Length: 536
Image (cartoon, rainbow, N blue to C red; front, top):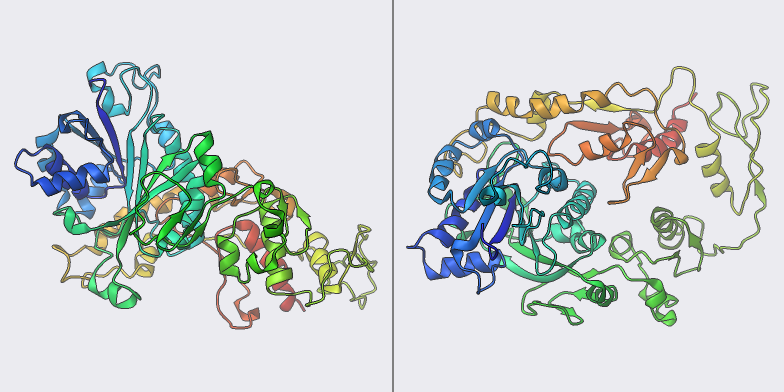
């Protein structure tokens, strides 16, 4: 590997058809000039770098055996890529949010025996350090339509990828179907890792002959005609390119607003002609004009606006100037008090606290219930400005589970149940796929995922207090203060793990519909209130 080599990491390439299209464009002497231009532009290869100096590590989340079962075309693609073995290396079972443990420096025992000429296959520079010039991930997806999980996934991915980028002019490219970038809060998640948006360009599959966006679960196209009919648009894709910000560029971007059609504020390589979803990047409240902070007209008026609104630092409510110790508390306050107005339109932050905590009666569904003659549980001495605030406090802090009752845990899905839930059938999309997936093979593909959750199904030390959780420092999701807490959190960020957290009190819901959760803390808080509707 020469000093001017350009090292590329392609993540989650499934059947490797994208890597093959790129390899043909860059390394086949007979490739069309337009294909060469498209490949170099997408991978951010400078004009001064010859194609022969580009090295590509193409990876999959699945093992090679899984790929052979899932994608009938993989064997031929793998064979075709052998022609470009000097420039392309395939790696399997690479997790996009665990890159630092996959690609390690040359002083590590795992790569000490690798010849210097082959160290690029370990993601290393000539000096033995790890550093990719470009990392690309096309159409990431967990196999479940949950925008919150994908926000957490993107946060962990950007944190992970920032640790393996070459310092300097390195890039991260993420392609998504239109709309996902907004629901997943892509720009804000990248900014957590000091990665700033530099450009947004259309991603055209026709530019990559042979490449088809496939579903991770069963290897079929998710841009098939049946899916398009259910979508509001024609499922166009865009590639979002990010760069590592230095101190000055990050400071400049902290007050940048991205609006449809252009990026308002100087930033490198932004193409104003490309539509960019509406974003507001995080910005420090101290750098804002105080009149803007106090201007109610500029504050979020809906839950959707709140989710896209930057969290001030420190977390001070722009409506009432109340301070909070966490982003979660800040957002909950703004939503409940100022958007939904659950405490009424005349709520004041400094209203007299005239409703003292009453504690809670054992085995009771109401703190006012004294019918059984029990002595009321000890009050904590706190007072509240409204009856509703007091009741919520008493439920969370003082109510107790009845004998034999427990906070709901996980329901484990079997492989067959997962397949049924994902609507995998031999006839589905048959017109668009070269082969029909055998349900038996699909079942084998998810066995490993089902097995991976088994350690979390026998949990007995359930958290039952707010203090039993802490926010993940990377994505902000609530993590249980238990030995298994972080492991469980990370498990949910793997494709199709078969974990279900649901409230068992469907009969008590006003609409009689199930309530599903992605955080144990959220399920616990919901259940502590919901269960009171059925306690007799």
